[in-house]
Length: 114
View 1 (cartoon, rainbow, N blue to C red):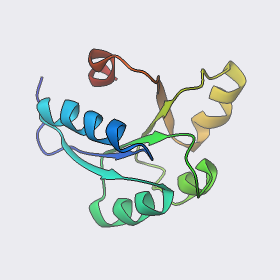
View 2: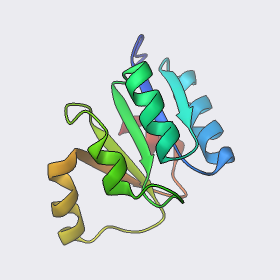
View 3: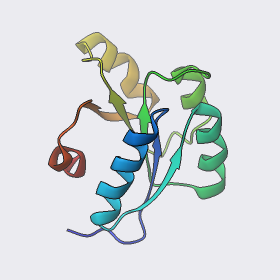
View 4: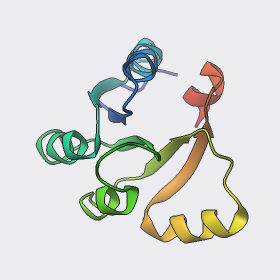
């Protein structure tokens, strides 16, 4: 299923992950913009107004909570993480727009499905 005109902001400090996620999503018909850190994320979020944010939860610079405060709460966030979330962590993140999380390394089909 192709989703035209939907914009996804991919935020990760690792260039290879940003670029591979971008290619996977563009092949599915999504428009994708990338950001390399939290500050870059907030600038591009305000300028591009994405429909979804895929956000690496552990990056240098701005803390995840600071990044989330700068995002529109109506835009869903899916975290990219190498850490398995506990139930209590999930409960803490749901009120701040976490719709889901994807563990790295991820399966391409799982990324697209979510």
